[in-house]
Amino acid sequence: MDFDLNLPKFLADNFEFTINGVKPTTFYLGSTTPVAANPGQLEVQVKLFGLIPVRHMTVSVVPEIRVIPGGQAIGVMVESEGVMVVGRSAIVDEKGIRHNPAAEAGVELGDVLIKVNGQKVETESQVRDIINKLGQDGKSLDMELRDRHSKEIYKTRIKPIYCNETKRYRIGLFVRDSTAGVGTMTFFDPQTKSYGALGHIISDIDTCQPINLDRGKIVAARIEGIRIGRKGQPGEKMGVFRGENDISGTITKNTNCGIFGKLNKAPKNIYGNGTVPVAMAGEVKEGPARFIQF
Image 1: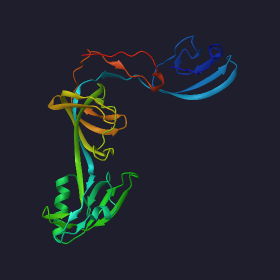
Image 2 (image 1 turned 180 degrees about the horizontal axis):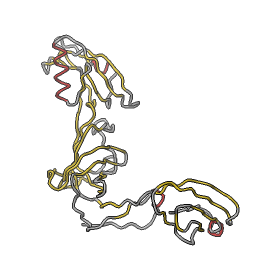
Image 3 (image 1 turned 90 degrees about the vertical axis):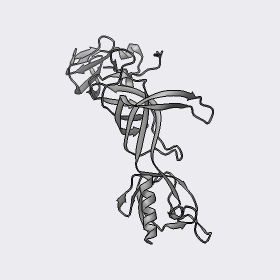
Image 4 (image 1 turned 90 degrees about the horizontal axis):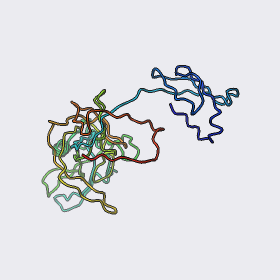
């Protein structure tokens, strides 16, 4: 346990701590390091000079987590919930008149199309076929979308227009249902078979909007090259997927801190045979760092 009060040492050394459930029960800062026998919540009494009550607080004791460091190259394949709107285009009908029914209905780039006429949509081809079929039948589309800004669901009705160029009915949208790329695994927890990777959220390349994860998986990858980053243009890893022999798992979360999920088996520990402890947020301090090459 660490009780750094950010006070001058001559004053901090006079605070007495009393915690039932640790050994020793009573201690002063710097005199000893208390150890909790079991995880849980503990009541802490703080007294100045061991006499004057200063603070009463509750602390949570969590078990130590140990993980296998990552560093392995992985291929990432993500399928979004619904299909994301990544572009809009005008439709030229048989009379040469230009239309953009989706834009007129208020659909914006980054919005996610979830349902059409009550039917859940999952792929680009499915959306294309539904629009064309309803257009041939002379019917409008009742669409449910998630707004890119508020994340709330909204509904709109759009009538498909026959496109003279593509010879099918369209509404003036380009959508995407999946994305793929390569990245780096951060850690693997052998106790839970959980992993973390990337260290950032996966966003759509065109709209820069985070992808609402429906399902995804990771496999082993081989890095073929590095594109050096420049001002206004981030760097990029270039690689190929190697398949599921070495690394195979699911993606369950796409967050600002990276992607997380489960692996089917433990990956090869490229640093050795042991695990390393995970520091709590309050334990991370500025200082020297060590880079491991392999």
